Amino acid sequence: MKGFRAVVRGRVQGVGFRAATEETARRLGLGGWVRNMPDGAVEIEAEGPEDALRELAQFLRSGPRMARVTGTDFFWHEGVDAGSSGRTRFEIR
Image (cartoon, rainbow, N blue to C red; front, side, top):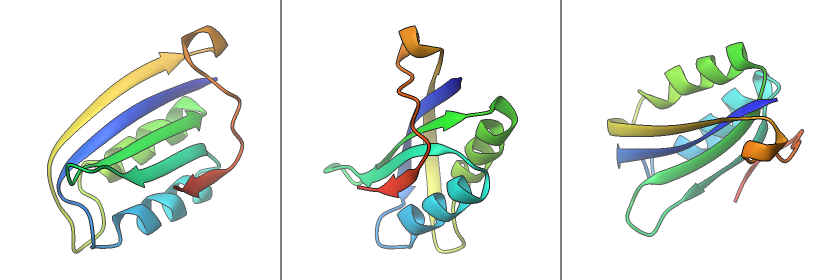
């Protein structure tokens, strides 16, 4: 199983970013979570097939229509030893 942790910066809180991320991740069959950070960023942890992860990563680079993404950092990992938890559901925290 592959996965990534991402931090998305810009106008990403109060614009439906978490809900749109959850919807996209669930549609792609990914597990993980999305949450707001105190500094105004959004953090995402996602796991699943690589092609689905890459599609979610592409979405995160722009976000929903009202968002304005100014930066994204991705930290990719692979396998249980690299942080995979085997999550099968995606949720908003």
